[in-house]
Picture (cartoon, rainbow, N blue to C red):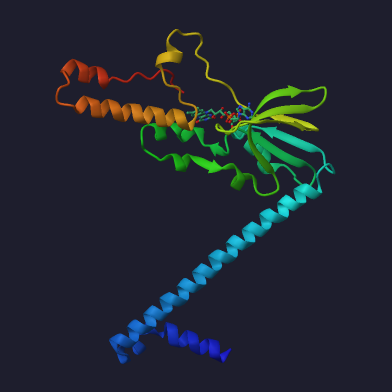
Amino acid sequence: MNGIRSIFTRNFNWCSRKSNNNSSFSGRLKRNVRNIIIVGIIGVGTYHGYRKYHRYQWINAVNDLNENLGRKPRLIVLGTGWGSVSLLKHIDTSKYEVICISPRNYFLMTPLLPSVSVGTIETRTVIESIRSLIGPHIQFLEANCFNVDINSKTISCKTNNESNQSTFNLNYDILIVGIGSENNTFNTPGVEQYAHFLKEIPDARRIRAKISDAFEFAMIPTQTIEEKKRLLQFIIVGGG
Ligand SMILES: Cc1cc2nc3c(=O)[nH]c(=O)nc-3n(C[C@H](O)[C@H](O)[C@H](O)COP(=O)(O)OP(=O)(O)OC[C@H]3O[C@@H](n4cnc5c(N)ncnc54)[C@H](O)[C@@H]3O)c2cc1C
């Protein structure tokens, strides 16, 4: 104990005015460098310890999932939007084997999406990894559900991988459908072809690029005043 105390007194007494006055500059420099190294080692150690613990938790949870396969009723949740995520955060995983399926492996904070489209905030700020939200006791599969057979209690899904698409079936005991809705054009002619929707991250990115392009193009010296006015005219439909 005395040894530890003396290490700390030796390393951290540079804070005290008395010791500062008595020691040389090179002595203080050496001690400061030593302190930085000690703090660095403790920091790196803690970080690696935490990562190991986190990994261990996930491995345990996956083992748990495999062991409990078929022992608990299987509850499948479709979607990673507002509805599904609020359910997933409160479900008791000791009672159900929970599987979440969605083509989107992140939760999107939709009220902030317009700010992404005008560059006030970055994409990373409005999304959260679904796995870190639901934790290790719920399995997540990135796929689109395209069929539900309520007689055999089976869903059919297609993986979301563009280069290597495959399909799979899963049985369920309870199915929660939280797949949201599609944009409605109310059959207004031209909307599909010429307008931008604002519902998902790719929509916001597309709008941002389009606005930026319009400003840059309007700056080109050969542009006429009329063309500049046309380029810098934006029409927003909907006031939600
Ligand atoms: C720009 C914007 C701003 C908004 N602002 C507000 C606001 O301020 N306040 C407010 O109350 N509401 C707001 N809303 C509305 C709100 O976001 C929606 O009401 C809400 O997202 C609906 O939740 P949901 O869970 O039903 O669907 P969503 O949140 O749309 O989630 C649907 C999920 O299902 C997944 N999915 C889709 N198809 C499939 C499939 N075939 N198989 C599996 N998964 C699938 C999707 O990938 C997604 O993860 C806003 C919406 C937008 C677009």
